[in-house]
Image 1 (cartoon, rainbow, N blue to C red):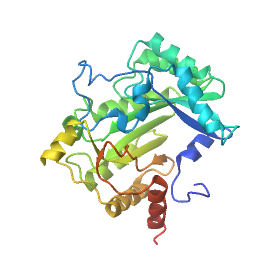
Image 2: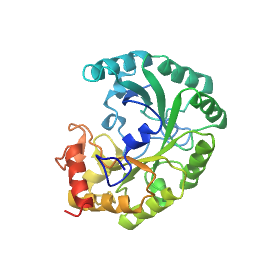
Image 3: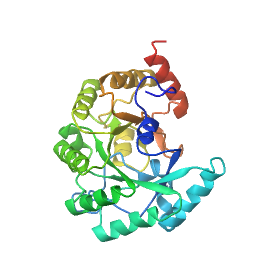
Image 4: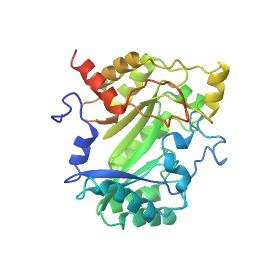
Length: 299
C-alpha cells in the first residue's frame, strides 16, 4: 500500500509497477460502436448506457486520434511539463473492428510524442485471438493494458441490463489476456437492477479468483436518454439506489473482501450534471475518498 493510501492497493501503485515517473491517461474517442447496439448481438445498448455520461468527448470524434492526444497533452503540460501519457481508448467497444484497422489506430496513438502505452477498453466478447496475438506483440515494445466491462458476475443481471454476454465469457477473456502477458482490468457497476449487497460481494469473491490486475467500480447512475431512466421515471425499475453512507459501507466491505494485490482505480463516477437524474450525492470524488478512508480507519 502507498503512503497516501494505506488501506488498499490503488491504481497509482499499479502504474508504478509498469512505468517510471508520472503518467496520465488521455481519453481517445475512435468512433466505435458496440455489438449490442448495431444489431450483431442486440439493439439499444445496455439499459443504463448514455456514453456521454462517462465520456463527454464522445461527440468530438471528428478530430483525429493524434489531435485528441495533442489537445490532452497541452492541457496537462501546463502543470506537469514532464508528464508522459497513456492513450485510453474508452468510448464504446474499442476492439470492435477489423484487426488491421484497429492496430493502425493503436499505432497512431503510440506514435504521438510522449505516449508510452495504451489502455484499451472493450467487452469480454470482443477480443478475437488474432487481435490478442497482435496486442501481445505490441505489449513487448510498448505497454498495453486491456480493460473489460464486466459490470456483474451474475448472468440474470447481465441479461436484465441487455449486456449480451455472460460471466463465463468474462472469465475466459481475463484468463486468455493474462496468459498473453497483458495486464487486465475489470469494470463493475454497483447497484444494478435486482442486485443486493450479498450478490455484489459474491462478485468480489469471483473476481478475487481471477488473474486480474486492477478493477474499477462505480455506483449505478440513472442518466437521461437511457431505457433505465425511462423505467426509473415511470417507477418500474428494479433498482434501489444507494444512500451515500450505505455505499461507503459497501465499499469498505469490498476492500476487506477483494484480493489484496488487485489495484482499485476508483469507487465512484460522476456523470455530467445536465445528464444525471439520480443519485445526487453532492460529493466530489476526493471528498468521497476522504470519507471512505475515515470509514476504513474506523473513525
